[in-house]
Image (tube, rainbow, N blue to C red; front, side, top):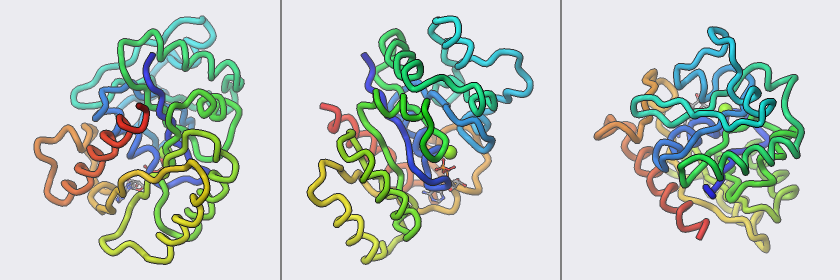
Length: 237
Ligand SMILES: Nc1ncnc2c1ncn2[C@@H]1O[C@H](COP(=O)(O)OP(=O)(O)O)[C@@H](O)[C@H]1O
Ligand SMILES: [Mg+2]
């Protein structure tokens, strides 16, 4: 069965979607997008739910079938998200069972799940079957507040904090706080992902890690994604 990575946080704008997209590409994973709002991986990939009749994720759950991931050029395999996930989301149990079955049936070693910020029953279903809960966390006060809550609630989950958007000189007090937060818990910290303003202004759909080589301002970011993928391969063993 494939390993399931769930990208999750109690806060938006922390880098979940960016990391989920890039890691899914880097790991040859199927990316399952549980985001119902715009501005997520599905839109970035180039899939427009409003132009489609089907809702691949919810249709699969209702019919008991395994959804067929969509293929793209230099983009991750995708099971797209949909606005209907807001008010027609599956229950915790149904979501958990579906993901496990898909992870068994798909011919892949990895499934990456991107989530809407905050807790929800179906989001929790995904967390409950995760081999890794990856929590991107910028080293900023409010983002650390949110991650502190996550650690408190999910300390016994396979939780890996991914310091995101890290400036060239990481703020020492924030680093100390993060170190204290995980002390005495099994929670791990993955390789830091550097801040790179080009990540936010780029308009291409292909993964940054698919570029050979990425534009210079994106190279450190791409290298950190590769490091994170390697870290995750070792983590699940
Ligand atoms: N390492 C980074 N450096 C600079 N900007 C980033 C970085 N990672 C993500 N961003 C930008 O920050 C914003 C929020 O990231 P996103 O991945 O959408 O977060 P989330 O899914 O947690 O809401 C986006 O505009 C994204 O392009
Ligand atoms: Mg997102």
